[in-house]
Length: 544
Image 1 (cartoon, one colour):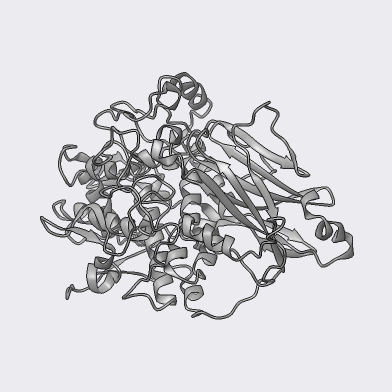
Image 2 (cartoon, rainbow, N blue to C red):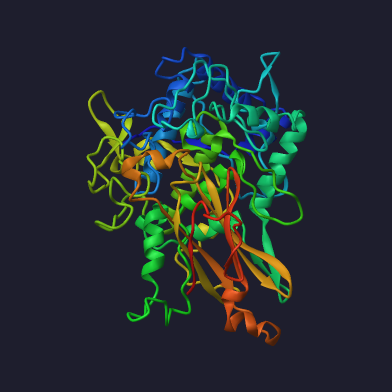
């Protein structure tokens, strides 16, 4: 337990405002620290390459060359997702503080649901091409990262799924592509040649971020949010840590809330107040894909196919500096949930629940034998609290008393302070359940989107971002954990004009699956849209 004065992680926008108003030291120190860890020899334990590589490539952990292995230390799809990333940020912050003159630097957060992000997108200090430090114009340390050595995909035997990247490769964001495998280089060069102007690319990136943050529909003059901001708010209402923490547990929780007819196997009577749980990992995934290369499917513009940025793939996401400012906000939202639910000193796990096993969702968890139950005592490799012991979740539950930092006031603080208030939706709804999506044949991350047709107008109900592995089909132990599920609210229209929608919603609901290679599958009035003889992947659609 620490007795030191708490360090305050502030909003990155606040640092920018200070800088504009003449208080340049906080942002300059942050830039100096980031430049410092990026300039270290890549074998140095504090180097950005070493720490960024823990999440996936190149430091996959023990067993990286085994086809049964997931391919990274990172925990996704299980209860260790929030705590593993919490300790990961703490380790990165320690590295920043190791740079001379930066011992007091604190990692800021990108407040993804504040007014600035909603109106303008990413804070400009994460996208500006240059920064003036100590009177010298330098490449902005927060904009990208140039690999000091190659990274090699040792898992995939198929050149079409090769995620290797060469020395001197620079990380990419939407709308660019960063695929460097032997089968992808020509397409990547042709794609990126369409986007030669850096400033224009930043505008395109910010427009995509704003689309994700602001999407909504209007039904009967009522505005219904279908956006990422609402997802962040909804995750604060998750009733327990297990389902809050990850997508695997939340999917099980949502399925358990159905009443199933034992004869037909179809949903019958359901709780009219049922609202799908949104786990923290869901909006987290959305930001990864928004920065890394997936459009949200809006119909006032043409989507950019072929964008494949590093944030959209776990193997290289943490080698883009924006990863840490995003995850700092995810950790802040985790802390807001803890404060709202009285869980700042203890977390509770539902024993042997989906999302609590080492092979749930992502394949084997680093450091564990397959089919082992995860607990708050499970080690969070590779991060050590002393020379012999790894951190575990119990070591980082309370960020203030155990780790010595806290967060400044930001967006959603007021929402979190509505302590367990009973809430009802502004609009009654049913639930769309999409299941039995097999992610194995899909290259990389993808999106599942739901739409409603009202009087010929196609309304976007929501998009679930699936942060996946580039070559899941080559992980043998992943093969039994490849099903993807998504849940969306379907508004119940209280108007005679739309009675047909309520009587037969299947005729008015559409599902679309889009991947890094474009459109994959979908329905139109419950019929397949895919024109291929054999779709890459199928799915099951239910209205519950």
